[in-house]
Amino acid sequence: MGQFDGKVVYITGIARGQGRNHAVRFAREGAAIVGLDIAGPIIDHATYPPATADDLEETIRLVEGVGGKILARQGDTRDLAFQQQLVADAVEQFGRLDHVVANAGVLTWGKVWELTEEQFTDVVDINLVGAWKTLKATVPAMLDAGNGGSITIISSVAGLKAMPMQASYTASKHGLVGLTQTAAKELGHYRIRVNSVHPYAVDTPMGVADTEAHRLFEKPWVTPHFVSMLDYHPVASCDEISDAVLYLSSDSAKGITGAEFQIDMGHSKV
Image 1 (spheres, one colour):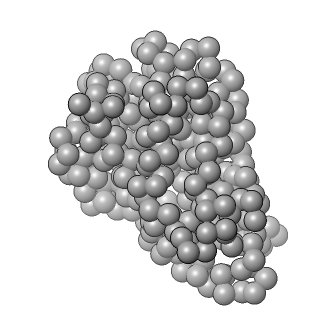
Image 2 (cartoon, one colour; image 1 turned 120 degrees about the vertical axis):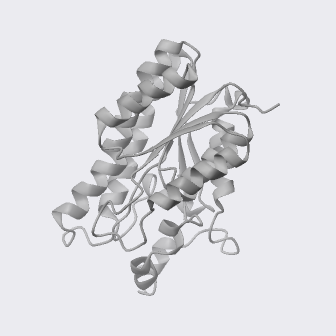
């Protein structure tokens, strides 16, 4: 028996990294998975490798390998009609929608006045507007089901503390906090809880394989802004983030909504 037996979980950005890990972990606990990922280049100013269609197929294989059911498609969170159709097909196939994890996101680097227009608008459109479109597509199905449930929005430590060289990322992740808080207030009386999760560095391609990040961290004026309290544990595993996501989605967190759940090695407090 799993703690999410019979539940259906919608996850964005499932091709690899945190999204894939959330999908596999929920599936192990009995949930059916609905997911999407663009699974290809999404911004030409990224300095880390993009997910691929093969990555998405591997996620499907891993979910099915632990006995899970999955409906996964290649698509963009910025495409509202695509998300709405995926939700409709999921409800037809699985009969309900219980939990949402708005996980998809991108990162770019540059000083406020040196970022290109694309570097700013692309990141805000994907990270913030894409998350809003995820909620717009999924919340009506949750309300129709009338089962309550939860929404977990993956923000960042940059949603709590401004980060240099990350103006568009910081703005988008701060915006997600506002989106979370508003949704929590609007959905509480429907028994739907909404929380944000705030990781620091995570062991994913975006977290550890970003060539521009490694270059910038060598600059003396940048380094102090990226220190944490736990210097012996500089990078979180995907399981650490999934632990939080599954907890916030579970009945153990039935009294938690509007929370900013930090897994940041104390970085936001430095």
